[in-house]
Length: 202
Image 1 (cartoon, rainbow, N blue to C red):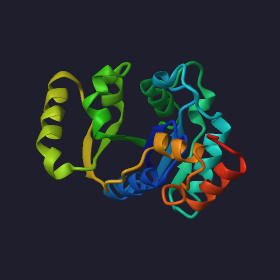
Image 2 (cartoon, rainbow, N blue to C red; image 1 turned 180 degrees about the vertical axis):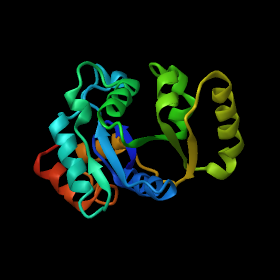
Image 3 (cartoon, rainbow, N blue to C red; image 1 turned 180 degrees about the horizontal axis):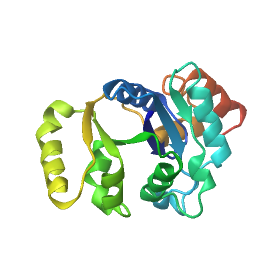
Image 4 (spheres, rainbow, N blue to C red; image 1 turned 60 degrees about the vertical axis):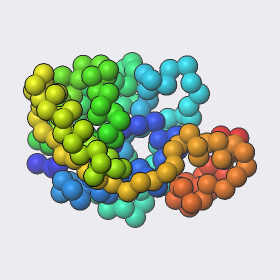
């Protein structure tokens, strides 16, 4: 049985913060692998312009080169309809029945999980790794929310991860690239080169 972390998102583009989060989650829970799983059709991004799936996948593959245990999965691209987390996780469990999955998310998403589609399924079938950039101050609030969720749902397991404060977002990177400014300190060199060569976000 392999222990596999799932890090989902749009990844438009992937940046250094994503890589740090994956590595720290892998170490915290002694995971065998962390799969970056770009969303095909993110429900919260409907109507917004996002880069083609193949572009986002290519940038992930470039970014994880040299990072042992980090992988890129196109699993969501094989599914029909919008990229709902519960559906993806159910299908993964059905396909990889001998493996154990951990779902990596930020504290903001953890607080909002009840607004997601079928949160009961998510909490029941995978263990969560919840990352906070300010865990020392947020510790009590995170645990209170966990106790609240536990009183309502069946929860398979949860781990809290204090991660580095990386003050950058994919949105800001797109803005910088679109304005012709350097993004080299926010993304791996290979990703920076790919964005420039393909004139993404211009």
